[in-house]
Length: 329
Image (cartoon, rainbow, N blue to C red; front, side):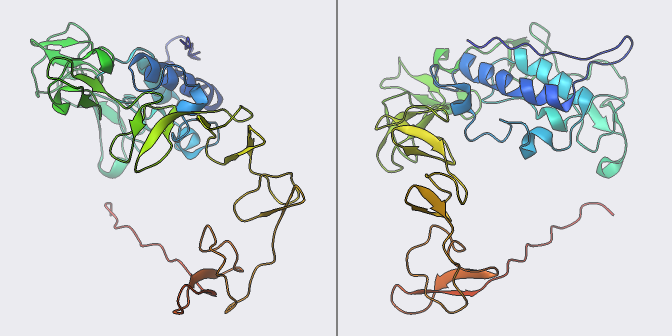
C-alpha cells in the first residue's frame, strides 16, 4: 500500500496551507491510497492506471491547477487521507473549496456558507450559533437525514457517526445499501456484496464495468484487462493508457510530426517516422474514413457526408458554442 505523506506549510497562528506544486504532487498519491483501501480499484494496478480517466491525476491538468485555494486545498488533502469508505471518490475537490474567512468564489467547505450571493463574499458558519454546524466525526451523535450530518464517508448508524468498511466487506441486498456508485452483486442472497466493478479476468460490458485500474476489452462482451504504464509491456492481457499505443510490445506515446512512430491520430507513419499528410481543400474527397471530422481537411473545414453513397467531402465548418445563462446580475 502506498503511504501518503502530505506536507503542510504553516506558520504560527495561521491555518495550514499548501502550494500548487505540493498539492499536485500529493493529490495523486492520496487518491490512489483511497481507491485501494476502499475497494474502488484493482489492488495490483499502478497509480497511473487508476487515474487514467481522472482529471486530477497530473500537474498542469485543469482539475489540478484551476481555481487554486491554498488553505482549502490543505484541508481537503488532510481529510482525504483519513476519509472513510462511504463514498466512491474524494469528498471534495481540494482546489475548489474554501475555509472560513476565505473568499467563497470557489465554494465553501462543510458547515460553511457564503456571506453574499453569487460567490462575492467570504465563507462564514452556516448557522447563527457558529458552533455545532460542522459535520460530525466518528462516534459523535447524529440524526439520519438531519443536518449537520456526518463527515463525508461516514454513516449515521444507531444515531452515531460510524466508519464504513471497504465495499467488498459490506453485505447487501440492494445497491441502496452500498457506498457511492457501488452495486450489490453476488450469486445468492446470502453472499451478495457491494462492488465498484469487476476484477481482473472477469467478464465486462457497457453495463458491467471493471474496477479502476482495469479496462474492458470490448463494450459488448469483454474481459477486464490490466492497463500498463507508459513504457510498460503490453499485449493480449495488458492494454495501453490513453494517448499511447502498443508498438513492438511496449506502450509508447504517440509522436508528433518528425518523431518516431507510433503517431498522433492526424499523422501517418511512413518508414518509421510520423508524417503530416497535405490537408485537403474545400470540395475535395475525404472518403478514407478519418478518425475525426477534421483529420484530413484544411483549416475551417470538416469531412462530412456529401450525399453520395458512402462519400465524404471537405466542407466549411464553424462551431459556435451556446451562451450559458447568467445566474448573477
